[in-house]
Length: 415
Ligand SMILES: Cc1cc2nc3c(=O)[nH]c(=O)nc-3n(C[C@H](O)[C@H](O)[C@H](O)COP(=O)(O)OP(=O)(O)OC[C@H]3O[C@@H](n4cnc5c(N)ncnc54)[C@H](O)[C@@H]3O)c2cc1C
Picture (cartoon, rainbow, N blue to C red):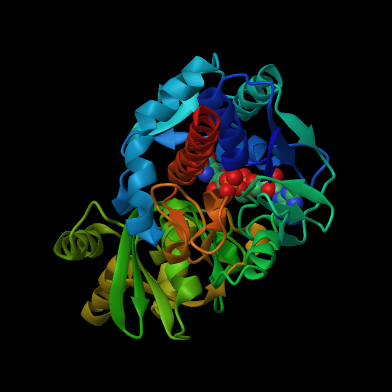
């Protein structure tokens, strides 16, 4: 009997277990066991995409990933978004593609993605042991073969570590996988929260709940490093929303404590157009400044920006000086907000950093240090953009890992 353990019944682990069985066929002498720490598998899948599961992105390409992107290339090319959609179609799950290539299940329910995976595991005879926390790995030489032993007790021919990273530990992921891989001498690149909101200094709580389409620039030590665009959400602690979350991993990994976000809250207008707008309002408007910008942005945002640039909100628009108009035009296009840090792993969707991919083979996902030990998913030093990229990586790396193990078993049995 060939025994395979998949540690972690998350997205990549489930995909891996299924792919092993698809590759070997239902051989009676192959046993795949998923060892899951929580009372049930796939808990995190249920909360993805706000409960809708953005399961991949049709535009997914290596450029949408950070960390060891060269390593990710092979798996992403072998298992493209289209191939992963066909994989799910084969499990009876159909999808719809929405804006920016985001793919969701037709049911609009993340639960149906998990069900498709669970039911396929059941059909293929994959064993699942829940409430099993793997904490220790070692190898033993039986004289005939080398086995990998989990928790000094359970012996397997192949082990896949699919424990995820450190983000969102309420869904089972707290970095256990890193500790186990360290036992074999693997290197862990310092994990940091990614796809997370930002804590900002002296942030005005009055803006809580306001949303605004913005161009967002990340400024580190006075230099613009990255930019994004989309709906920014103002919260009581700072900034959130997709464009902010996309930039957050760079905040998390930066050693600098001089980090700012520069918001252009009117990206549809040039600075000259804003300037012209303000002059024209001054010529005709005898009302209070608190309403000066409410024709082009949220009123509370207008009040905040005026206060930030030192313009009294209760003065008359037609009394604004040229210098005040200059200051307003500047802050509207370039509102600098000092960032304290990114929020913690508890609030993050993914992990930047993780297991050093150089110590694994990109075409098989096998450890270069320990034969028959594999890794897949977020545990590796690869993190993707928002919009289905991270699950795309989980399916692709998990399936590649599963195919490698399945083919190796087939080859051994054909010899
Ligand atoms: C709120 C939220 C929303 C998200 N939305 C999306 C989205 O819409 N689209 C997208 O692409 N990505 C999304 N992601 C990211 C995506 O869910 C992850 O990148 C992906 O699930 C990673 O897959 P994985 O298999 O590597 O790890 P996980 O899915 O995290 O699974 C790891 C599993 O291992 C188990 N485990 C951990 N340690 C042990 C141990 N010691 N022993 C046994 N079992 C263990 C855990 O309990 C868990 O079940 C979201 C993440 C969060 C938190």
